[in-house]
Length: 500
Image (cartoon, rainbow, N blue to C red; front, side, top):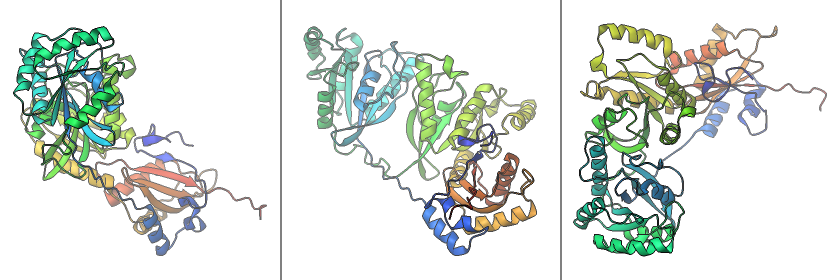
């Protein structure tokens, strides 16, 4: 196996992968292509039909449950308990969650969305004021609201202010007394009747006590279909906004959506959880995921930063397209390149957005061009857009770049056209000899899309440089702007002539 083999291209800039074929019956390399150098059109047509992929997303809108409450009452812990997995970032300090973040949940065969929110306080200022507005927006859009109160503390002035707002709401409200780990605390929770929201339902989110009963009650309270009948049905393309802290990811999302979707503050690292938002752009609905900025070394992070980095990696893996934001006013950093490597290794379509362009003068543009040539050599195929999320400059150019990248990511080249092209390229520029022998490329096919993955069946090893050459020629002929291209080489196994 070559030194640049592996997922996403390993150490090479092209995304090559090298593997030896098995020659098993029924596999691509065990078919008719291995019997001759170039198969005929009927073989190509049959293979195209075998490799064609059909994928439709029949997403149905789900009712939304908003989890609200003052800081540090255990909202995110309860969210993880309700959805049955550790998704929401949890740490034993107040104010970890800042944005409103939605997670899919299922109970007794019914699906619904759970929306975690930051801690709400009536007199919040600065960053906490922005967090409180996100919680208020979540309440306004939800189909049911779950108010979480710390039963060990009792009803505070903030809880009472929250209750006054919810009593005026037309949305169904459930009152949950959390941290009820014993019968003594359960007796104390009865005092929460004073909030005027009905019976306080006692649970222990950290231990799972009575959360099953709470889920039954949630299903009884939520409508079968969401209140917002305009919710899109279909499969919005999933886009991850990634980059180091404080490059303007949340500002760009807010500018694209025309509203305040994500909390924006001049403190680096404001976003902790990935924020999942549907935005209509260019006549289509897109699902944007605003992620936490990745620190220099994830293994050195602890607590909130560590789990936020894991969520960001998951968001990239779940996305179809990544938008990498880079601060154009500052030199490209090691952190930028780390995020770039994560996206490239994941095989996602890519648009590189150079943000804060309003701060870039002529001298900085010259330096930036040199930095791009020197540092971004791994992704010369990436779409590039220069914007200012603050002023809105050139933001409208982002959608065409996204559409081009995803179209390339989905592209499938017919096998006949691919082999006719390859025959001409190999005839003009044969692969280099290895061990005194010239390896032959007998057949090629596109084994998959998302990203485009090509398999070459050969009689010998192809050097990494030649595979990079073939990728360059592939891009010249078929495009693939904004998408990685993977090339896998499978060698024909030597036949044992002694076997009959």
